Length: 328
Image 1 (cartoon, one colour):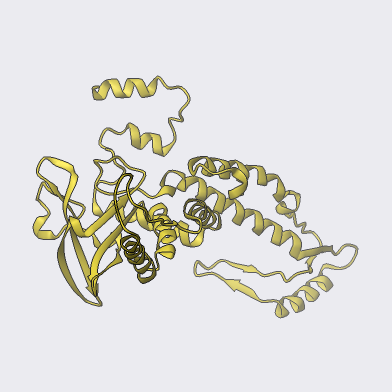
Image 2 (image 1 turned 180 degrees about the vertical axis):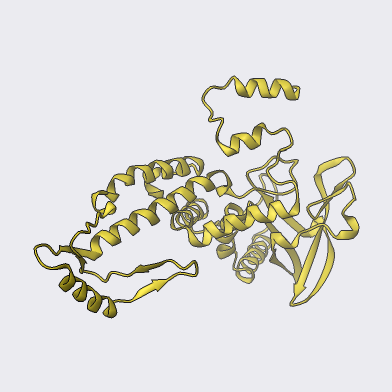
């Protein structure tokens, strides 16, 4: 399909918002798919998802619930012979012992849950295999450490730290890993047979995965802002108990009273030069004659914005394939 036809088809869809920045970017023919085109863009996408996973209460809950439901208590392993195969019980017991040793050495039940959490948070998981005393040991490679070395930046077979077979982007050959200790770093080319790369929310041909929360990051950001603004308004409403207006007395007397009161109250000054006054719980605000204070927030009912938050969370739950009640 030609670029012109692509645009005509999209413009025929009357339901999308032409003013939406996401759609403007999509209609810009310079923007390609996948959503990252450089290591810096991939790092930025991962960084935003990690902030959501560590600071946003609803995002944190969503990832925890997914890990609980997908992994549960972990896999249970049974060892038995294939149909028609003649295997004595002692051999089956030895195989079972090897599995138990692997699970114990690697704390595998805990790693299974972390694998799912990392896969949702980062969009990918790198597991590296080692041999220790004749046993298999699994360790993580952090996604940000898998990068393309400068000397291979122009290589057509190395993309985002993953070296692939000639003319076959779906077959990894090696992974280029940067190890860092303080100011020192070391690069290592790790054979693909030693690494398991799990990636999600992407096509098989994409070199790296995309975090689960990427498509709903704007919804989660709006939920954060709505909650912040609602609780701010509610806290102001709850703090001011009385607005006391002085009428029928001389303005000079009231002014002297307010001046004395101001000396007891602290003003908070911002770097911009603006200042504002903190009101303790149950504060009484005095209004001098001739001045009328209008508390705009007093007429706002914060609870009426709850349906808006629920609507945003409903969209997030739909993306995560979760019932709404698990998230909100």
